[in-house]
Length: 330
Image 1 (cartoon, rainbow, N blue to C red):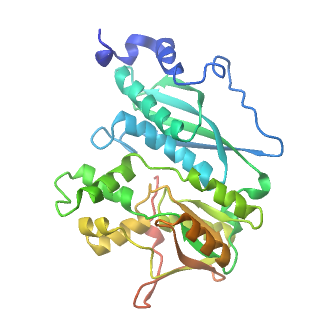
Image 2: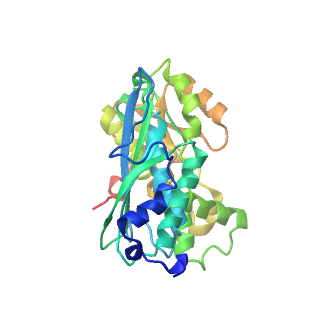
Image 3: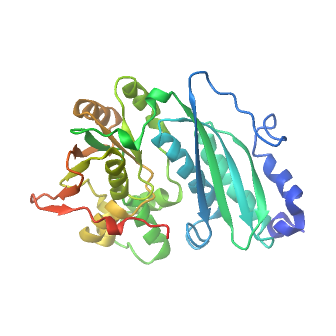
């Protein structure tokens, strides 16, 4: 039987584990748990994310490789949002016995490719039988306690910074679900949105900048995996503050071409899965950070005392943030 036609049930648990263990460092796996050395005076950061077939991904829009990449990127993004350096991840995999082994191997190839970009090992996990395929990843990281980024640390007058454009992942999903759409797009615009959806990049590249700033002041923030509007709302909620978003963040031109301005603006605010960071810090620090990051990083508003979130458009028209459009798991 060829590898491409081999089924999970043909190998069994131990046979499948033998195939998957080659993706892990050999000196770490083999016991009931992984032992990871941490640096003194640092805190361990642990985050877990679950992706379920038919809810978070489908064969129609996402290859097994890209499912692995996206699942890994989502967890590494959570570490970046805490200001934490990744130490390793574990993978919990639930799948039917009729699943192709080649699909599972490609999943782990995607996981490994994403981890390789950030010098992070896969240190173990578990597999079990299930009617539905799901991937649960736990990521471990470390951070100096006083330098951790928290949602609850926003202060009156802080500038709100985004580290990149939003809505591209939602645009990419639209293109994948409806291949006939977007005939007016340039190839580079189409590719950028599809890439944003299939292979997002966690913003671990920002950690050196944030570590330097957090030596002097506390940074509030989180990632925008559930949407830009949700990230702003969560920070305000945990910090007991409000926000004014000035004239709205920039919208990717290809997104407007694809969906029109109104829909593009909705996707930019509520689309989710862009995995950028939303940060709150004093104005002078924010200006320096945006200058140093360049690209699409921008200041989009400020923190206010009244616990409400308002959007101010180019005509000075003020509207309330529509929290009913936020992503809901149930």
